[in-house]
Length: 337
Picture 1 (cartoon, rainbow, N blue to C red):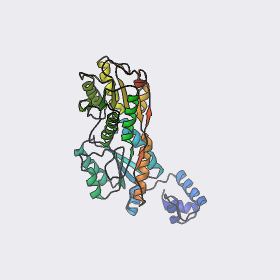
Picture 2: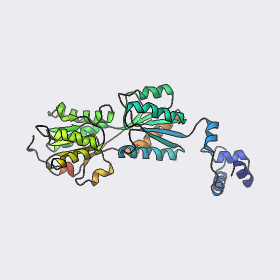
Picture 3: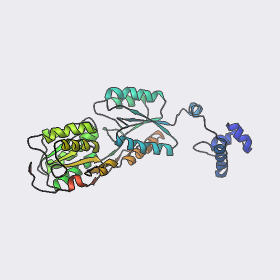
Picture 4: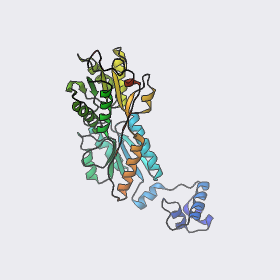
């Protein structure tokens, strides 16, 4: 089925059919548009996207760079991006960089070779030259989840999230605390940790460096870092983990050491993924609006591509209290005040 055959069947000019089937049917009445689109659906008409991209110079394809799409946080953000893209008439293509700077350039080049109209970056790092390469390429881009100085982004207020976690543990009487800090080259790990430590320092209980352990954002990293904290001579009475998956790893390390939350060690995560509420001991965590973050990043990128004045957006996190901290609000504990 072609445009010409649709036009012949309806008795209209082929240009009318073409405009009616476009995203912006300028100059065609609403009734005519509906009639043409209804016939196109019944006849199984499909637009030739390749030919259209040659005419317009646009592929209506958005590239998305993530560390790992298997990470539920990244998957949820991507879902928000993809749904917003579909609503705007775009498709998305996603690449995994494994959070490795040496892979970012090749994955970016792959997307550029496919002619993407814009890129959403969820894996920005302070030890990578990805952003400078993007600027040289001239392709519109927006950061999501992680931020960089002077770059357009949509993020959660990670400093505030760290502060909320600290205020909760302080209110529960925890003064000797540990932090599984995530990746220091990612703004998420760095700022959540900074917000937490600043709050403890202001309260008169600074967190010593040996109680702050860098990690990845996965379960295995959380378990390894958790073991390190839990075997300190003066064991922390609470641990703040930079992500929920890291917190799951900490809980695994506690199980191996025959420790329980919150009786022996309270645990706080970050992001509030669906798993957090379903654990044997439901996890206290900082809720981050992940899907909203993705959809807002997509809309921000569309605005940028359309030449609009756009600004970065910072979404507000909230504290979600569950049993991993709320079950034992004691002021004095055996391994620390």
